[in-house]
Amino acid sequence: MDTVRRIEWVLAEALSELDDPTAPRSLAAALKHAVFPGGARIRPRLCLAVAMACGDDCAPLSNASAAAIELMHCASLVHDDLPCFDNADTRRGQPSVHKAFGERLAVLAGDALIVLAYQTLSAEIHHRPERAKVLLRGLSKAVGMPGGIVAGQAWESESVVDLRQYQRAKTGALFAAATSLGAASAGEAPAAWEALGNWLGEAYQVADDIRDVAADAAELGKPVGQDLCHGRPSAVSTLGLSGALERFNHLMGEALASIPACRGEKALRALLRAESQRLIPSHMLGKPQGGKQVNPRREALPSSI
Amino acid sequence: MDTVRRIEWVLAEALSELDDPTAPRSLAAALKHAVFPGGARIRPRLCLAVAMACGDDCAPLSNASAAAIELMHCASLVHDDLPCFDNADTRRGQPSVHKAFGERLAVLAGDALIVLAYQTLSAEIHHRPERAKVLLRGLSKAVGMPGGIVAGQAWESESVVDLRQYQRAKTGALFAAATSLGAASAGEAPAAWEALGNWLGEAYQVADDIRDVAADAAELGKPVGQDLCHGRPSAVSTLGLSGALERFNHLMGEALASIPACRGEKALRALLRAESQRLIPSHMLGKPQGGKQVNPRREALPSSI
Image (cartoon, rainbow over all chains, first blue to last red; front, side, top):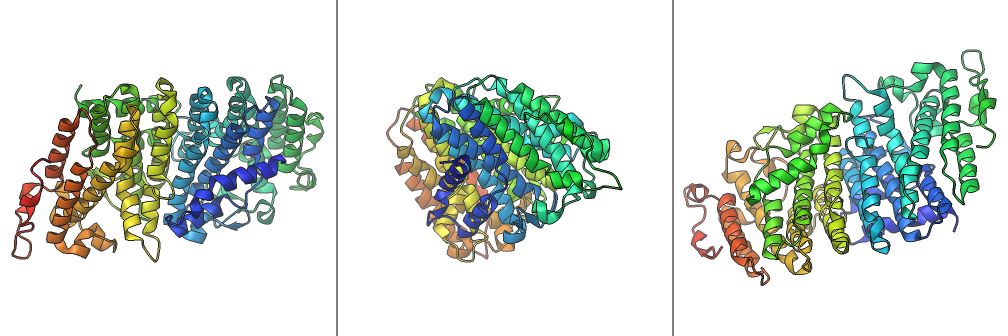
């Protein structure tokens, strides 16, 4: 089974309890809407790529880790789209959960997805009980306080923002969890893999800022111009579009350089190369912005990505 | 250390990471506000009472279970008070989290509390790895789909409500987790203890319905008349006040009858007796409602409670 099918399968398995006839129907439907169809599934793909690079000696555990990370990501999207945050009407090319099911069920769907993430991971820890604590701790660190995605979102309510802390928490934390849980699922020490996740998370955040101004809504499947609209810190507003692209290339280079020696290094690099192209497609690079090329330095991107 | 001080101590320990200087300040403050000062802490007291009744051979694990259950309860209160649900201004005698910190931080505080509950429990599972799966599964069952408190809240958005399922999920599930996690923390099979939690949860729900019409806001520390106001199913609207009190007595009797044989039975019965008095105080029983005594059958309450 290829990685993409493997991820969809484990997510479908994780959600299978929703077919229980005693479950409230609308919340069950809201949860399915929040998870399917997915976006790029980059975090679980990264988790499995690292697990495979490390030998993947316990597929049920790496599957569960990948699913848990994606479910946490889905939860954060559902809550981020709420009227009190982004008030976004669309997500992944369809109505956002609060638009389709109402605000109450969107709050509850986010809560239920957080629980489901832990439920999915803890259902498989008996395969390798000695890995349980580090996996669960890694998942919590990525989502909760003081430096997980919930903390990242909370920085937007602070009068004085620690920008590095904000970006690390809002995006980096779940990427760091993807790489470190991938490694830990396969019995490797997660610490050596955190750097890769952190660099990729930061690169992804910069790419997101770029796409927020350079892509169109149909391409993204969600509204554009949200950073400006909500007065959020953005790499584009700080560095300009060209500077942001330069930063993206730098971060991807650092990510590659941080990969620990492992047997699956080649496949991992191939994934990162493809992901870099997906994040900032060539047509976006060639699009004139204010009369000049967006990224004259794209060639500086390491050819090995 | 007595049970009340033990619970406050483990909760304070669980929240100690919020003092991390890298944490966003407002969310840290919102989390503390949601947890301190507490209410009656009945769920963690029940959890510890059952753990002690079963021998309490691993205090770090029973402490963590009790704290996790209370943190989940606090999370549910924060989200239940949101404008899209009860829109409650006060809770536990102080402003609700969304009133004190705004809606965004209230959504995030609920999310962070759910994560903190798992974090607190999973930090101690290495003491008894063989108990990890059943404890984590019990916690998730109490909160998530298909029958946990999130599902219970979601029943309020259904056009056709399964009343028993609704009440079991909304209140019973976390009480059942309190008793079953208490037993599991001490190495006992949790299944035998679930019935006690279910009966108590139902009794608590009926008591809550009674207090919603028979107490005053200052006494409860939250607004009264919420069931009528939100058109929610209530034992009082179904059975009348006198019938609801009779039902409460019946449920407490069933709860007592369900206690498995154990060494700490006496202390457990004493806790239930005190709790029964706290839930429906004598002065409330004597209060005339529409010209008659509220509960002429109070004497039927088993004297052994």
